[in-house]
Image (cartoon, rainbow, N blue to C red; front, side):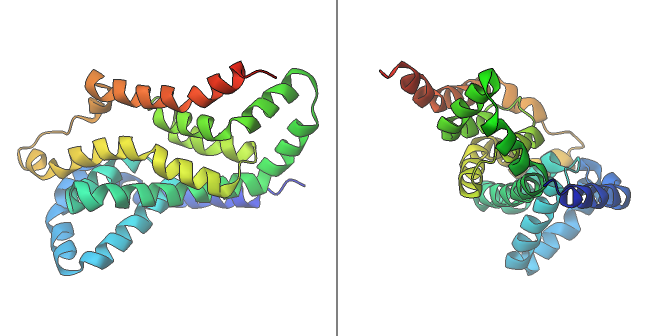
Amino acid sequence: MVRLWPIGLLIVLAALAYWLFGDRLTLSSLREGQDRLIAFRNENYLLSALVFVGVYGVIVALSLPGATVATLTGGFLFAVWPGTLLNVVGATLGAVVIFLAVRFGLGRSLARRLDGAGGRIGRVKQGLDRNQWPMLFFIRLVPIIPFFAANLLPALLNVPLRRFAVSTFLGIAPGALVYTAVGSGLGRVLEAGGQPDLGLIFEPHILLPLLGLAALSLLPVLFRGRAPA
């Protein structure tokens, strides 16, 4: 049975949140409010960390266009450590919300249909089921795969929640570390009136190691494919 209300609820909440806060999830807003944010963090460090994780989770869960700014803010407020951890936790929580909404609404029904399908579709589904861990890490480590798509596909294939959460947490950590490190120096950039280099992750010295990790994640698939029947 298809239950569309969780997905519909997320869409409605996303539209409302974008209408209320869409123009505030920008670097310009961060530049204007940086003094207030730093003062609040200094006076309420633990509370500010919890609020940050919650806000980040909401941004990801509602697919608002502010996740990159949020990641930079994590580094700006909390430095590389624990900023990277807070960014990864917030992003993982938001991804889990999307995952559960889609799986509850469409994922299980679609997975049952794919399991019962024959021919090429059935073989593809069986192959994905046998190699869930490698594929989950691969789609997280390759930076050109949209984050929302990486949340949607596992839900539609009925991947177990624990497997999805663990692979998301570990798989997004390298990229989060890069952007958090950029954010840790954001104060100086904003004071100088500049803009952070958001294309840093596509520089060869950053991108190639990430692609190397993605390739390593697929080695079990290759070995399993060559194993004797």
